[in-house]
Image (cartoon, rainbow, N blue to C red):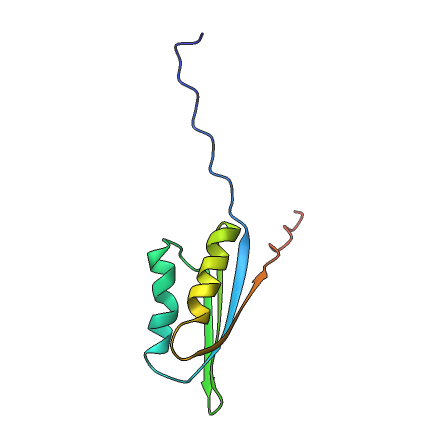
Length: 98
């Protein structure tokens, strides 16, 4: 038995996900969309949103375990003002050869 502790393994990368949300155009809604990410300790890598007469559309890209991603989708789907929340995988961009 070795007396040297094993080196900690590098954390495994989490799968990338995209949540696309359609909602009412309410100034407070963007904050309500981000709150579940804070609760689950998930930092979105990209957030885009646009508002017009039809409402607010937002796209949130993030890394998380699939179960956490689904919980976030369910949480957003029942948020007041949200009409739809769809979850999809995001393919990582292909690395370029030098």
